Structures are given as C-alpha cells and as structure tokens.
Length: 337
Image 1 (tube, helix red, strand yellow):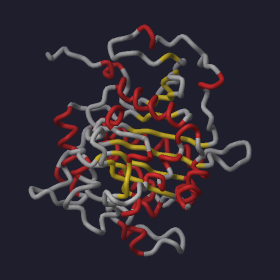
Image 2: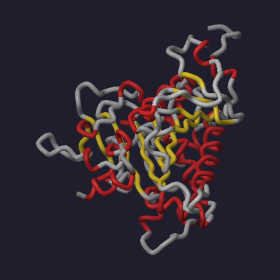
Image 3: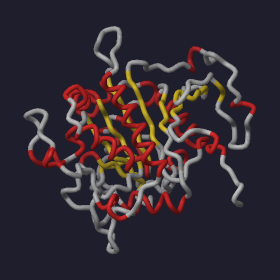
C-alpha cells in the first residue's frame, strides 16, 4: 500500500445506510437514496453494482415474507462496504426480510482492535467507561453511532397506517458494532424521551454476535430513573432492562468474544444475563467473522453454562426461531415452551 492507495468505501460517505433484500438486490438508502442493483459477486466487480433499476426484479418466492418488522445490522472491525452487503444478504436471505445495514467503516484492523480492547487495563479487567478514558475513538465509529441512533429513533417512532408502528424492531450487531450499538442505546435511554423509552420496552429486540464489551450496563445509571415498576435498581443499570429482549451469541473459540461476553474476567454483575448468552461449541464454528464463521442454526447453540450432556438450548432463542420468515411474536411464544 502507498499514500495514494484507496479503498472502495473511500468514495462513500461515512454515514452510509444500505437496504438489502433476500434476493440480493440492494440500494443505498442514505445519505441519498440510490437505485436498486444486484449485489456484486466480488469486491472487484463494479458492473453488477451499477445502479440501473428503480425497483428490484424479483420472483414471488424471493420477496420478503415479513414486512411488519424493521431489522437493522451494524458491522464490526475492519469491514469494507462489500462485506457489510454480504452480511446483510446473509441475514436477509435467512430471515426472509429486508435488512437495513448501518455502515461502521473500518479504520484498519490494528486501530479497530485497539478500540475493541480499549476498555481493559493491563490485567484484562476493566469497565466500559474506560473505553472513553483510555483512547480516542475513531471518527468512523463515532459517526456510525450517531447514524445508528438516528435510524433507531426513526423506527421507534415511525407511524404506520394503523398508527401502531412496526410490530417489532430488531437490532443485530457484530464485533465492534456492539460497542457502537451499546453507546447508541445509552444515549437513547439517557435522553429520557417517554415515547422512545416506551417503544424500546415494547418493541426493540437486541442481538449481538462476538460482543467485545466488558459489560452490558449503563455508564451513569444514577441519572436514569425507572420507566415502569418492573425495573428495579439492578434492572435500571442493565441495558437489557430498557428493551423488550436481548440475546448474545458467541463462538466458544472467538478471540474477540473472549474479550467481553464470554471473558474469563466477566463479573456476575456484568449485565450479560446468564439465560440470554448462547455459545456455539461446535468444532466447525470457531472464528469471529460474521459472514462465514457464525451460524444461525439454533441447534448449534447452548446456554453459556450448559454442559455437553445438557439438551440444546438454542431453541429458546427469539432470533434463531425467526429463520424462513418466522415472526418475533411467534418466536417469543416458542421460547417459552
């Protein structure tokens, strides 16, 4: 690489949002709405991505089965725009939904990993607030946080014909994207907008993969008052108490997840609820990449504390029961059985 080396993402503004459909058709939705185009077959292919269509050309069985839910995805470390498209396509095809991808542009693998590890002291123990104290965050992650917060606000308050808005809003984050999401959720709660907080509790579901955050708690909970009687003192501190549902997924040998969600230094008061951390111990799923190294098969996951003789518990996951167009409402019912 030289001083004149450029990446394809360099021609896109930092605050880029994609819409990706199960068929692979996608378009830029922000900062300026583009035309629908086919997903490129490789990072070097330009022709297929040339915007030429005002609407996607899809067969009936390629169209999204679910339109009453809004699904978001924010990517992790060292991600080119092409890889965000692939991750969104994976989710869109698996879930039969249109996925909105919020682009967290990578600033190089070294700096991205420093930002993920910046919450910790020399012993590996730390708290999320120290992420701000130890390092200066990259411009791209700060811009992604601002953009993600705006996208969530819009979805949480969006009216529909029946006046009820989306039945559920699903937020999926991977790797460094979990840190971006965490800070965006903190801001939404701290601003204490009644309409936003009520909608978060009733409709927002949060799912993370390979989460490097040392905890899943509010930074300054003393300034946050309970929104309803169900939130006790401990509940107010936990980010999961401010949304309808939270789940965390990790491969047992994912070195980034070992920094956070499945860290040996994780405290009991970390905010990672024990019955909502699902670990994949299968030998074929050991890496960190979302696209190729994270499974969406519920049979691959067990509760974090489960031993090999225990039955599989991935069937208790709300997210993993949404494959093929399953509704969050139905997955919620299945998880209770």
